Amino acid sequence: MLMRHHWLLVGACGWVLLILIFISKFINFSIRMPDDYVGKTVFGWAMPAVRSINLHSAQQPDKAASEPFTVSSVYPSILEPKDWQSVNEKRLELLSTVCRNSSFWNITHSTLHRFVLDRIFVCDKHKILFCQTPKVGNTQWKKVLIVLNGKFSKVETIPENLVHDHERNGLPRLSSMTETEINRRLHSYFKFFIVRDPFERLISAFKDKFVKNPRFEPWYKHEIAPAIIRKYRKSHNDVESVGLRFEDFVRYLGDEPGRHHLDRQFGDHVIHWLTYTDLCAPCDISYNVVGHHETLEHDAPYILKAAGIASLVSYPNIPPGITHYNRTKVENYFTGIGKRDVRHLYALYQGDFSLFGYPRPDFLLD
Ligand SMILES: *[C@@H]1O[C@H](CO)[C@@H](O)[C@H](O)[C@H]1NC(C)=O
Ligand SMILES: *[C@@H]1O[C@H](CO)[C@@H](O)[C@H](O)[C@H]1NC(C)=O
Ligand SMILES: *[C@@H]1O[C@H](CO)[C@@H](O)[C@H](O)[C@H]1NC(C)=O
Image 1 (cartoon, helix red, strand yellow):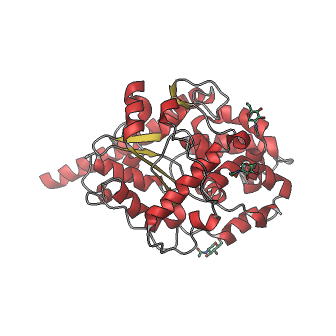
Image 2 (cartoon, rainbow, N blue to C red):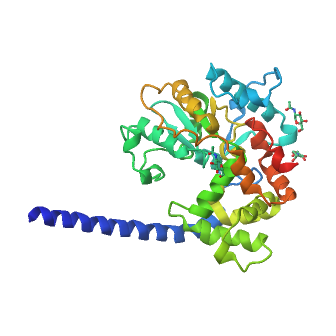
Image 3 (cartoon, rainbow, N blue to C red):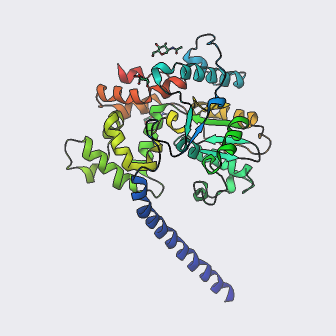
């Protein structure tokens, strides 16, 4: 009898807790939104920085460009390279070559904005910095770092909701540190991030935020989608019934002046479709490894080994096939979208395609 009361009490507490969490999310959301909307973060490089870190000394020495690169050497079609280290070296060489060609891209900068420092997570115990690029399997890497920081003993035991709870996950951001502390870490720590085909990432972001929305994030459907539809769809009659279409999303992203205007309202939420360049400043920070989602089954163990943590933690199982580039899916999403809109979209992500050796999607552009 006592036991039963005990369990009833526990159950009741559970419900109260759930309700509180629900309410707090809502309150949090409605309070936070106006704040986000005034543009407290920095988007793109033209806007003033909240705080900038001078990185002149962090630049890589200017090596003369060596042999020319072929796409296949960086983005291997054969998934069994003998030596993954040489794949990574080729990727880094391509990155620095394209970065140096800044007269065209205008992406090399000598200051690092606070916005980028916010994206970088720190593991002091093992001297690792990880830049978060949403929609590229970052949840799993954050779990790896949480384990390394000692808060949990195994990746499998970390509750999903804790991973992105930055008050409680014990994963500090680089932006929370002083300039001296930041510079020291940027110079001496192992630094990495993961990329994937820019258009596939976009499709994934679209599906995740505007179609499925599995986490509790109502602002994507209720604030961002209607704003985009109002601006880019001729007829507004079907806003409620149809919701945001990929076509509208592409048009918004390809319209540079219009996007800048909207993004000020959207705040931090745009990180799901910002370019890797804006998120991680790969031309300013000399990363040790740039992993590719498409070859994650090779990249993940290589990163653990290169960071010296392979014996301490393992990357969660990767279901076979899910990381591979799927051209049919990309074609399906872009069916019926005008070439002009696709070309504008490509202009935005062209830097990401070139820096990381992803082939230009000719089948969509020509
Ligand atoms: C630099 O950019 C220009 C303009 O796109 C391009 O023609 C040239 O091939 C690039 N050079 C290298 C080394 O990537
Ligand atoms: C790059 O920056 C320079 C100087 O700010 C500017 O004159 C040039 O038009 C820019 N190029 C592109 C392609 O944006
Ligand atoms: C690729 O995407 C298409 C369309 O979404 C799907 O039907 C197909 O099963 C996918 N192929 C693979 C190998 O996942």
